Amino acid sequence: MKISAIICAYNEEETIKKVVTTVSDYFFDEVIVINDGSTDKTEEILRGLTDLHNLKYISLRENRGKGYAMATGVENSIGEIITFIDADLSNLTEEHFSQLITPIFNKEADMVLGQPSETVINYAVNPFKALTGQRTLLKSDILPILEKIKTSRFGVETLINLYYKANGKRVKYISLKGVKHPTKFQKTSVTDATKQFAAEGIEIFKTILKNYTLLLKSI
Image 1 (tube, rainbow, N blue to C red):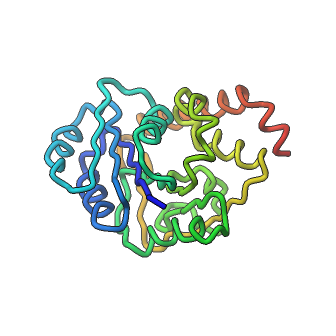
Image 2: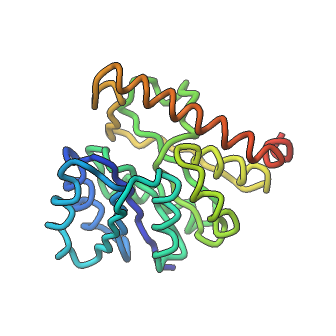
């Protein structure tokens, strides 16, 4: 089975090169990078990486939201297995990718969610670990909700989680030891980070309301 890695980026000039080159070094058949209308040097950096043998680069002219970028990656993928990877991680290794993919190959799970261990909240008690951007799944499983994913923006992880639970899919959680994922407060000012959290919270709430039937089915 072919495996596609999808990396969605918006203003990630500090980390995007390292993440993309690291992912490209390993066993993915293709690495699809979606530049979601970045206004910093992300575009310039990614244009300089187009000689990577398995890189497929897609640049969106304007910011369309995480859900749209993820769906665009899926639409342009060749893999039966999809691994989503955030663009602002550090300390990624081959072992982490293996952890994310092996349970799908072995049919132990329908979706694997990987939570970076180097976060503010300890993995064992993290109430938000289901919202992680690190996840592997079968493309065929999310094709039925791809149009909904496009309009979900930062509610995309909530939508996928609701859909999987409502349909009785098996989900496995793993800790990606040593992987660091910076908080918004570490990446920007307190004011901007607070605004981003508020906006994302609203998008998640809207996603739940739009997919209330999935919520009821999953209870």
